Length: 371
Image (cartoon, rainbow, N blue to C red; front, side):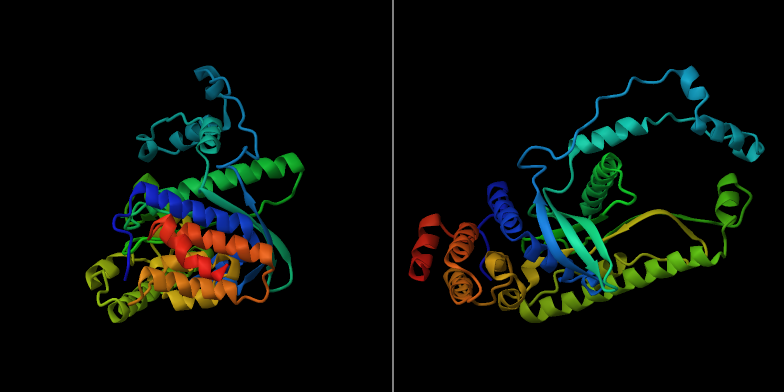
């Protein structure tokens, strides 16, 4: 399989620009493909429209509030959170170790808005299988070369925090009664990346039999149907992802000669879940997409025609870079549903993607025959 000689930051940024251009030019088609590829989400919703949010490459589409003046200790003493701490302390000696910690949530939200979310955001118009309309904001993360995925959860959490903060602010300004769905998809472009992505960020506390104050709070909901149901749903979701990882490792061994991850490493990605004693305070599940392990011919069948360039990030088998580029160009050239302008844009995107693997002059020479 031909690969870039060195996946440098410059090469990665070129790939990000190609992906961003595909989403800007064909947002609805890309949104539909991202929602449905290697994800069960496409079974419950359909994308009927989309637009790219240019919050990174263009002007911000929201206003970041000014910092609020910090409250004095006297002002904080009468706040609802201070009253809650006082009530907890009054419960008895078991809570005597509770420490008061001041957290400025307004400033945290402001900093989240300043940092921004994923580099690409698609605002989706959705339709549920029931026919009900919905909206969603899909953040697309493109991890840098060499990322095994273990740190992707932090980027996912940052993106979702940004999405919820911005969407809630916009909904409040518009007087809306609900906010769109906050969605995220990490897309790994580079060979071997993303194999240790746990595909969830989850805060879990396991209750043990005892008399501690925390155990008393946790065990208050012990055995409830809602609590057990949430753990069962988490187990079902992670089992599905584990089975998909195992199947992908077998395919890699067959097509590339190497599973690239051991059985022990695969098992470590599947957490031990206790349906009765695990208490989850926050969970964000997501489905990663390892584009590099998808065969090029499969991507040519599923990608939107205008976004054929992204197939170059798939697995080429024994093809050379020139042969892979020609296959992509033939698909664009033979598409009957593209007018001349859209075909030219698809070929221009293909030439930009080809520059990752060859010089611009070589890519132009190969594509000249398809003009």
